[in-house]
Length: 140
Image 1 (cartoon, rainbow, N blue to C red):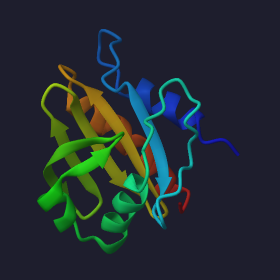
Image 2 (image 1 turned 90 degrees about the vertical axis):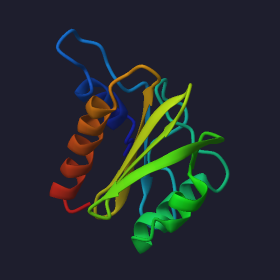
Image 3 (image 1 turned 180 degrees about the vertical axis):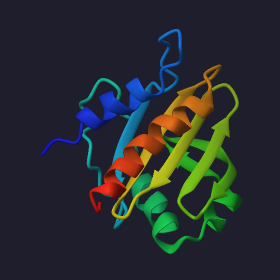
Image 4 (image 1 turned 180 degrees about the horizontal axis):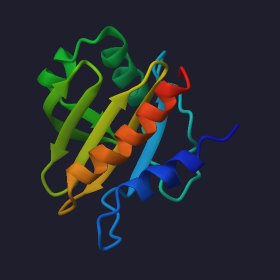
């Protein structure tokens, strides 16, 4: 099964009233080990590099976000400044000039999306939440 259609759905969920999408890239990784569920071949794929997925998954799996607090959240070779964590399943981070990322865990996955600089991260949060909560409703 390809999970890539979830990227399209997530981006569509971030659109504002004028139809502007507030997420340009997204991916889904496994909570257990950080293996990619979506492919890097998708036009809007957020492409984690090296151990980024594993490191993100480790923090979410253990519900210990101190590594993010101390060293930031790494995605696509960039270090995003950790902003906050909510309910041990949502993480928000930003990088000046690059935008922001939203990460939310379900039972078995982590949905990650990028909000471009100047975009509304709140809309990105909504898109990520819709997908993560849908996966959760499926027991995933």
